[in-house]
Image (cartoon, rainbow, N blue to C red; front, side, top):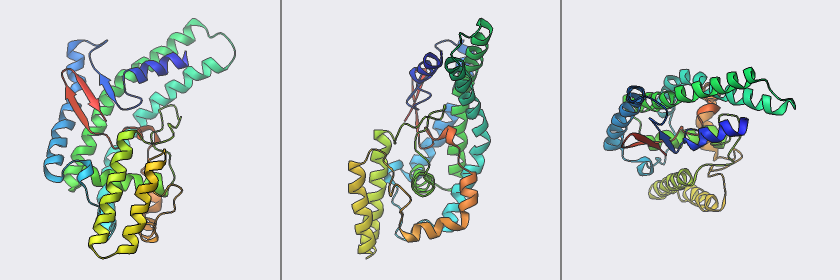
Length: 272
């Protein structure tokens, strides 16, 4: 039962953050209602791209991540964190189904219907919640003057490189082992952008360090720069004063779509 529920969710594209199909088992009115946050997220995303460019266009400056940029990043995190609980509920629904599967006894029909009912209800609710999450993130980025590329850059360096959280953790707590191919490409590009900015600023030793890391990332599976927390000292010094708050603003349940953009194709929404 647990595997079938999980496979259905992933088949709908929510678990892996790739394709969300709306309207399959919903009324037209319900589909349109659930599309609203995605439409608002896309509108805000268009403004972000017009002002800051796409994710790979961001050039991390040679001076590194300054306190004011970290403050803006944390303001975005504070905006989206109330949504974390909603995604945790879906993970708990998976856990309940897996528990039925693991206890070695045939569950009663009542237990099965309750577990499936809870999971199905939470899945449909999550479609709208995911749209709401990305809408809140994009609108907060616009308000704070931060693009999608800079957000992804700080997010990965803080949560995956420095604090060691695994990227792309499923809602049931299973790690996928690394970023998607698209996310890895984005991070390698951002690392090389930073290396080039350092070189142009005459900081050749640091530029070489980041360039070497970009080369290493091509051979790695996770896509995380400086995996294991062995970041340059200047980056760690920038993070240390905010360590507790940054840690408190992390949500594992949303880690699989934190960097995502959204695109509309007919009555479906693509998230990647």
